[in-house]
Image 1: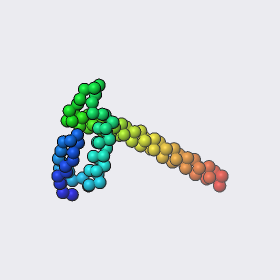
Image 2 (image 1 turned 120 degrees about the vertical axis):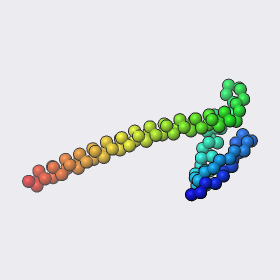
Image 3 (image 1 turned 45 degrees about the vertical axis):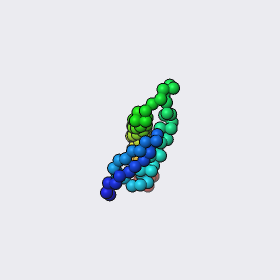
Image 4 (image 1 turned 30 degrees about the vertical axis):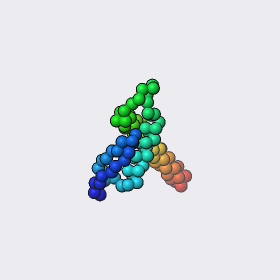
Length: 103
């Protein structure tokens, strides 16, 4: 894919970047960032926070969520591998029992 300029507005400011991501991914990413920023709020303890700081906070929240999801994925993969090993063990036992019954 070719990189193209993407422009968007947050907190009344225009931002531009270059990306080769599909339009659908860009829209999903922007929606996720807007959700994170809305959850963060526009001020902390009654103090107004500059939009650049809010963008950094939103990015950090997304990064933290990403790290958490990576840990969950790792735990899921370990559990899935253990389940597969258990299934193989059970199949082996079934085959041994079936062979003993035929024998």
